[in-house]
Image (cartoon, rainbow, N blue to C red; front, side):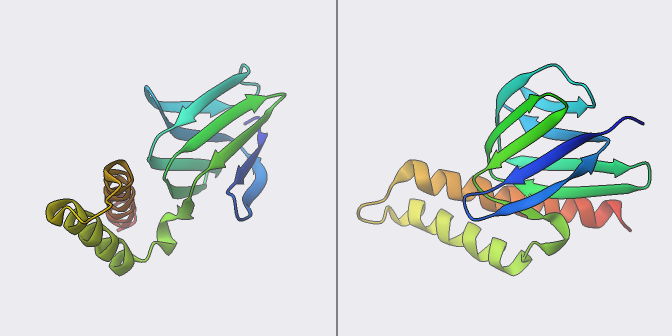
Length: 139
């Protein structure tokens, strides 16, 4: 199968930069697949599961909190707010983050940034969902 270069970049570092066969990303209007020689594209990415197909036998799953995808000249670049490999998700930390974010909203903490608290809930729920989904798929 034909391939293309995928780069996944966060504010802290380049997480991934390799040749891949395809990716599936959570776009603003639903999941979007990208293959080699895809038409140029720029789209926002929503929190969800980013799946990389490196080869017929190698699939990588990541939890992404949002960002942007750019595709051009047989290269895809994901600019992500935060992203982590599904098998490296700290499940206890994700549960604690979810509990804290929900607690802030329920208690209506003074100076609460409601949108930020809701975004925290979505990120934590996404991490838990990705962890559980990938764990079930690999049983």
